[in-house]
Image (cartoon, rainbow, N blue to C red; front, side, top):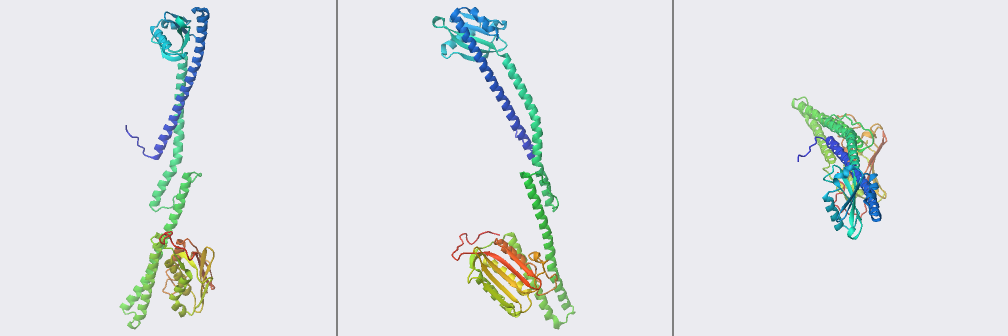
Length: 482
């Protein structure tokens, strides 16, 4: 048997819906026809049994077969009484004339009488001498030597005609239903499949870089919800593409500027524009730019690893206050060089947190480095921690130049710089440090906020999960991978 192959989900849905509905209609029609036929024959049997019992009583009282004829007139019946030695028949319709002397009836009656003690019984059959279906009821009559079987025959052509009409009506209803089902199934399948066809077309556009296409959303069904999700994904992809283009442009600019500067200095030294006695000074500038480019490339690699999930947050319990002390020691020379005052305030002597100490150390280094870099000489660098029931708040603040209000919402963006100049300067960074800080804090499931005002300084505050000193990591030091 050849397997039916469908070219699309639409064809499969249409076929299955039509077959299912039509099969149910056909089964329902056949079931109704069968039940109605059985009920009709049951009614016919009850009537014929009643007639047979009346005939049996008449024979017992009068003994004359002439009394049976009136019973046959109303429904055009054939009544036969078969005794072992004779057969008595009564009918009013001549169509029964050829059936009254059938030997098979005598044999059948004798067999019924011999094997059955539960008369009356009924059966439906065709006589060999008749061209119409007959329904026969067998009733026991008489006793002793005059015991016999009384047969009441009825022509059930009218019932079969009615049943055929029911079958024709069922077929007609199925045909009409087929068109209705075909139309409704086509409409329903189209309504279901069309959004997926649109999605397929739009996804192909997305694969070519065109994120302007959107799926029309109507209603609140599953397909509409999926279309809405596709549109949201398109918005995110479009924003990601804009970010990617901006990222590439910024990286190119950040690398091109120092390379151009270094190339110019080196060529000037080689062609004699810069005299030999000044070479040492310009070589120092070139080395400074090299270090800045190296730091920027390292920041780019760190940011890429964090966003791609290569770096995993290795959770452990440690004292954040002790980590801050060790980190400040590494900046001691720079703090002294700028004659800055250090204000360290811890709400408790020890504050245990549950985090990745290496990544939090990088957060502290970036924030402290920015605080020192953008603070004039003689200002204050403040570091504090405050422990609550579930979290520990860490604050890094300075009293430096501050950040303009219009720049505050963007300081965590890649390559965003409050200082727009790209000339070599100790105050100009790569614009990636704060982006890395935010990614690390978000990877821990925590938050970071900033408060700043021009000329009043800047304050960064981030949270960490508070840990009990007895807490142990039971999953190998790994909690939520990033």
